[in-house]
Length: 203
Length: 121
Image 1: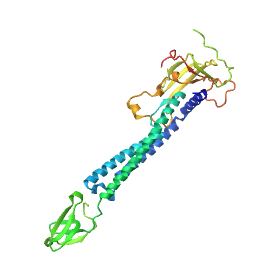
Image 2 (image 1 turned 60 degrees about the vertical axis):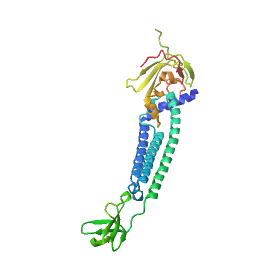
Image 3 (image 1 turned 90 degrees about the vertical axis):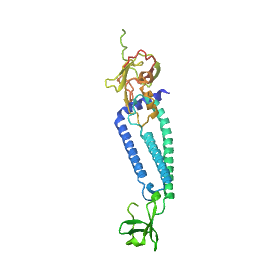
Image 4 (image 1 turned 45 degrees about the vertical axis):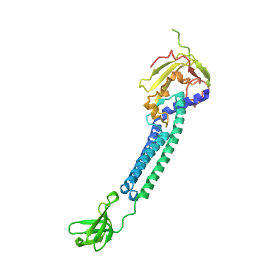
């Protein structure tokens, strides 16, 4: 290391003494932005609605989609944290502000940041692929929304579900969803009314 | 006991690298515990020079979690007297010193060869 280089590192270290607060503020701002993004990511992954609602999937598909989403979340969270640490450092990290100490720290830091950026990119891309796979599983295994919903009323009870058949023997209605789907037949003699409805309780 | 050499105020400022010098320098921890103070006499102008190495945030950097778990001592905690290049900070603006010089002194720089004579913190 030449004398002029040593002098430059020493001057840089001396300069850092007077930039402690701005440096810390910059670090805090970076972490705030990163953690806000992480919170948004969590919200997006947790709130899956409509056809992507995992509760309406068959058991096997639900387990697969849940596992994919959990793995994706972990990878995306890890990738985000690694990216934030690579760009804004680790809070609380301190060194003795001398030229040679700063030079050694910088050399180690270059290696660490380079590795973290690559790891963060791999984590984020893999996480996105897993999210896409989870959505694909949800879409491919979710049935179409039930139509022809009716409410069959008898003096004793009310049955609400998808109309399967209606004839002299009575009215057949599919109730429940997924593994609890059940065909219920209401005898014609006891039916007092059959009326179309937009939705059934619990569906 | 020998008297301290006289400060040569006439030494002209120049960025001289003196290499390793067997000078008598001492090291102590600052009262607030946040700095290491290295002091002695400049091998070039003989002025008393005091350099304070404070602890601080080096910038936007990271430290590996593995290093923390294994309690690896950071290199930054090494003895500045043994590792750092010292610069004359006698505080006297020697002739021809640039106006923007960071280290006010004669411009000399050196490494201390023998740290055994330095005082502990």
